[in-house]
Length: 425
Image (cartoon, rainbow, N blue to C red; front, side, top):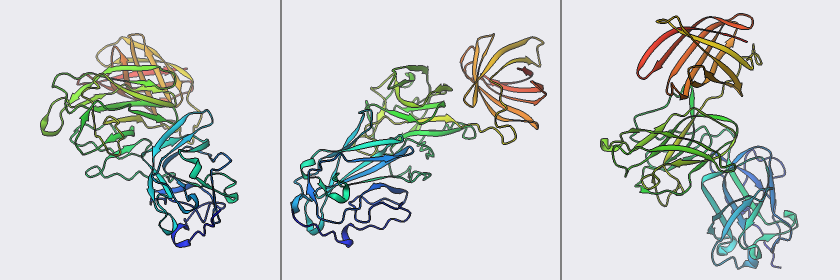
């Protein structure tokens, strides 16, 4: 076994803020300004090939992995070409593998450092993951690595805002906060109540028929808006957009999209739906009815995903004065100022939102902005039924197990109306 004397100039990286126990002699890659080294080993001595123990690491919270590096000293011979690096979770699910690039090791050893750069990032839930290297026969290890392969895992810093330049770089954001790269799209969802949770964008030229385009939500969310881009579609041919849970196969929608103009005024190139649909945590595939005209950019960071964006409703946090004061269900009635008849329904609490059904067939999601002694403010969005597209705002006062002095304003099909409302539980 040849001695590997690790030169500090080439391998020692001092990482500010790295927890104790992380390596001081570790392999590439190095974190960027918005990244941290999530896992590394302190390997400064001589190494052998073909690690006998599985190479695993554990994360105690959800993280986005951006780079993985493995070391292939191979007795000073390096490798002819870098292979692939992947991950496997405890259920056996495989992530990747991703093609690695090669960088020389100490003394110019060819392709000793294998670095897989995950352009879109890979979201991982808390758990233990095994590193899969395509050439374990040249993968380095020693007793300092617990006889496991030498590896370095880099990911986004928790709380870091993904770097995005919408005019020059492609952008894939799979967890908020995200920068909305709207290009020539003139429509923006209501950012006071919604946030961008997934986006695939590139300012470069596009082709059609992208690969699978999916996103992951780490908690239950209400999806408010979904958009896809169709540069090669024909005006007047706007189709539908739906969602499919990749694990259960459950289909949501599809919903008929509205068309919006794009660059040079070309009509119906942006397809948009506003479903206000409640989704459990999981991974969802975007189902576009015309895959043949859905645009994507080949050979860049978008990874053949279709250009799209997904907005979700911002979570409501109950006030500190009343953290558990929302009733599980309530009976509510609306009255228009131009009519004496009432329309009544049942609101049922799910998570931090109410899901409501009225006797006239209307269905809606309601988000509570405030709920305390100073007053109640609730926003309503009808995602289906007889009044799909309606939006409303309710205001009132709490009085025991009831809401009184309720005033409401709603907009539907371009007209705005006012009324009163009451609720009890």
